[in-house]
Length: 171
Image (cartoon, rainbow, N blue to C red):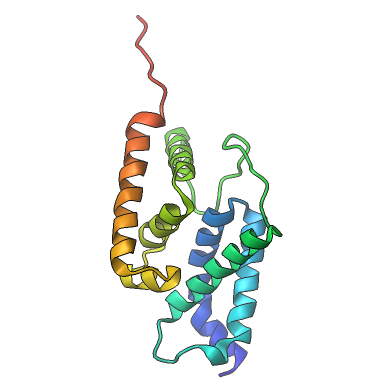
């Protein structure tokens, strides 16, 4: 298969890969680098892909594994950026309320463990099925389902109780 044919199959997945990479590293430049490395690996190892396998799950697994390898090696640890200093990622549009809600969700995601955050992002944001998420993460489907449930519960609890300070009305 030529690189043009591979590009035609992979190109529609790039926006989702960028969102997922951004959620993992929380830095737009580092996310773009991670996606670039992923796409290079996809093209270079295309011959190793199972033709009957799920292309999307295979590519997301490559991205995740590259990220985990970089974390283990300590090479690409992005610097921590405070929520007030963070640039708005692509695709976020809205008024002040929308930005405030977005920041609350980001802060809530920060409270989740890496395992719970990964499952929540893959299923909830990237719309991968439980089976695809299990393939990407290497987890049993039951574990994916339980982590997703716990992640949603913790995020909901954070948004209901921890995201906003208790204010009282002054007359």
